[in-house]
Image 1: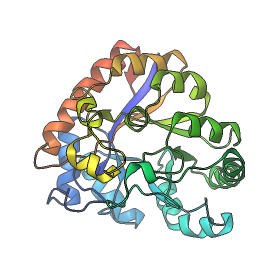
Image 2: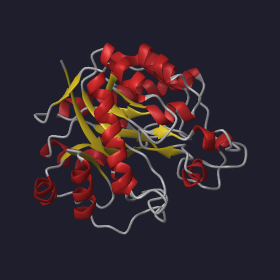
Image 3: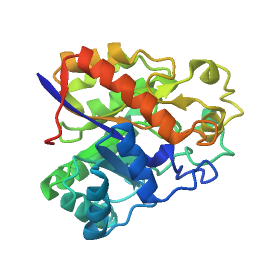
Image 4: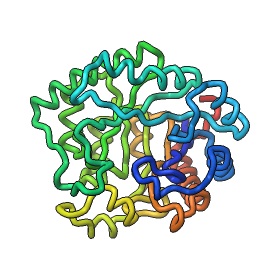
Length: 302
């Protein structure tokens, strides 16, 4: 039987790109709500302390583990040695917290945090540029793994690696040392075939974000006028069980390739219109249902 663990991201409570889309709750209350909803893991966010002892104390109080966390990478334009310095503090924290991975999100050249930039204006790389980028990412990923915490590469809307075709090229031109974070919602929003992506790249997937989409909202987004953040504000994303994607089919496909690890609910939306605790409970219930149907067991020993 395959092992799975259920985590959630704090972006449901506090949005790091649009602070106005944030619930006025403390880290303690965020962790309490996540625990009440049934989750045993949470990715890090802007209200998390970087001191291992301080963070460990508050996590232990609520029975929560660090199950990942975003790193704003700059390797597209930057230097591997500089990235080693930039990630050092987070690497130290994640090693101390026994985190499964650091989520690498490329922020050089991205428009994901720019509400004035329409989706259609995102940076598009050619294959040669992706080949160079893939070599740098592989080098950096090898170093991170040697330090004791692997990366997980996050394809993302409005970022240089957004579409299925762009992800295919990055996987083609990077080594197996660069693992993949498969984000269901971002790939669906980008127009990709989520099951086909699993079929092609399952061997590289080491982390899964179970973000759902509201297809009716996404279908009405004017990508020549509206930004990624406009789409978020309009409600493009939600939790499993509240959106348009078939997570039973998706999780079964992951199980068919032997994926084991974290399934993390990461769904940024307006916390006033979508109360985080209520949505967390919906997402947890749906994930629990589909992972059991797919043949997983919940393993708290990770």
